[in-house]
Length: 492
Ligand SMILES: [Zn+2]
View 1 (cartoon, protein in one colour):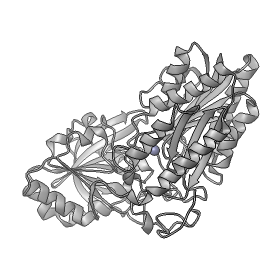
View 2 (spheres, protein in one colour; view 1 turned 90 degrees about the horizontal axis):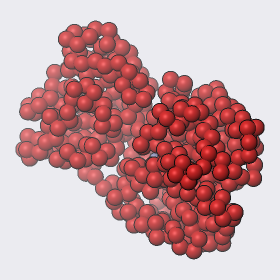
View 3 (spheres, helix red, strand yellow; view 1 turned 180 degrees about the vertical axis):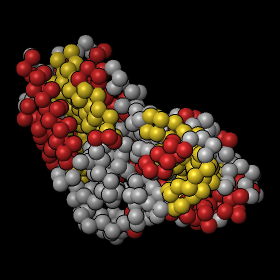
View 4 (tube, protein in one colour; view 1 turned 90 degrees about the vertical axis):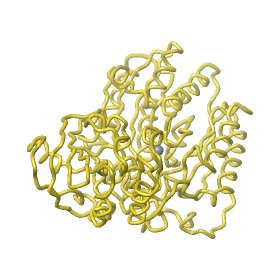
């Protein structure tokens, strides 16, 4: 069997003014997808492994991925889409294609276009009509009618933080293989639930997601259901499609798909009020006060404070200074801690470049923050000592700098990357466990931090991934929408 594969993965935060462009993407073209592109946390890796194991001939087109950020450049998207389609056409010209399996996010937005996945799937369908097409999606996918019209089978991640990306890719590939082996059609039904959920209320290890995901797993394998998923949508995109979707794919049983999707939608709606922050949380100022106390009086270390309102892995700018300003206002308390405070970190290309130019040991004056987020961030002048620099870190080739300012150690990046990457701090010679207080621009802690945190405090700080959705001035989301309209009625 000859299967065309490809992928585009971006979670676009429409509150963030950055236009995600060429430099922000890592692109694997053709055979590169099968080699360098086989990263363990990519859903495409699971697709490739599964198709390989089944003896399929894999025809790779293109895999483009970027860290969540502002909407994607229209020109860049047009180029990536054209290349993916050209490679799909070439595949078809070289011989018959039996199926298509794609790794998509589901909440990628493009300048002037809006939802990208529906547009991309429509175009792929024009090139490859009539063959089974399955898609692996992020849990935060926003499902549109276009997507449903073009894809036969869809499945989303079942974990948040997302640790089952590879398994989800494998799941999408297995559905495709099932359709091909049986010659039967995949049938997908979607039931929309008018709910918007803050990212940090939906950890899959906590209720209600734990039970809801268990319901999805229980539905799978019964009555011809191949996949059952909750796609939560993306709360920091102001879009007319925003909603939670219960999505079920069956093997040729449209009725069973409808019934299961409706059941899951009902189940979700019934639990809507149970979505609350599981972690200890306060506003920025209070978070720091509680953290100082935890270290000084409670002897807890390391205490983690998540600067959740400016989480680049949720597409925020990474340069809101709300929490930094609160720390700078409390430097007396900060200075009495047994170690410096580690702050990871800030996306600031100019500040990072200045540090790299000056080199370790130099004392320089830089400005940090407020390049992009001018609402919640301002340029903050700091006298710093450059402690360590590094060029070209990670797949996005970001330069890094570690600087010291009084009792603060601040990580700076030249690229918009996430601060949950477990290799980031070690690359700078830093171990989070050596600090009594670690502030990180992240929401729920990634496993590498959670495993060492004596205490985790979430600051509901201000930024483009503001967790308090009720305070975001949405204009396009469909209303009524829970929890913006807390007393709304709805019958699935
Ligand atoms: Zn996600």
